[in-house]
Length: 256
Image 1: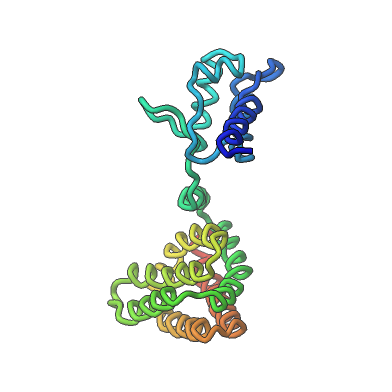
Image 2: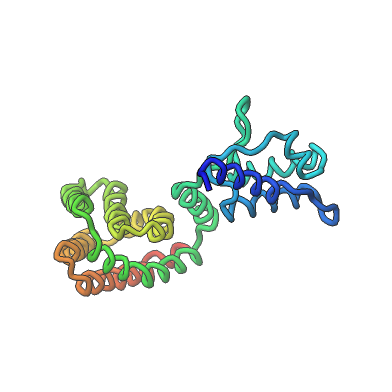
């Protein structure tokens, strides 16, 4: 079949399937919203593609403009479509940054002692495996960034606690990026964004904690450089045990 004819048939089939008539047994705007969302999830409507006009969709769905506009408003508020004035409506391009920003907001709003305890549990489950995967997959540019993180931490002004904790945090985020797995990045980056709150307290009050962390990160980097997965895993476990001890001893009581 010629490619142009195939595309035409595909578009006709998609239009008939996605924009078919809506029944009246449920709220019309909700049914429209669900139908368009399902088409986006099933990739019948692709990211960046233009939706039909309001008039066309009203005719195809056999609904009022009021019901359609309410559905489109909710889809837009959820970030599934974009309404561009003078241009039309488009399926949104879903980016990894969008998922991370949503989780950042959730964690910020839920920040308390329970969340911190849960995050420590997640880190103890994930971070040793992240170190292992980073040792296996790390690109050279990630190694260079990790070395820079350690140099920055070593030369950091001891009175600038905030810069210290941000630099320590960046090491862990760079390690996650070094895995080459976008799911790891989406999962861990929002968690790491919360850690400076805890670390800022610890490093400002516990003598020698910065030095301990610096040496621990050097050992993790050395293992990652050698692609020694077991050593990277082992050193990450040690650091997390220390972090948990510091949480139990100093930070937990503050959050109660």
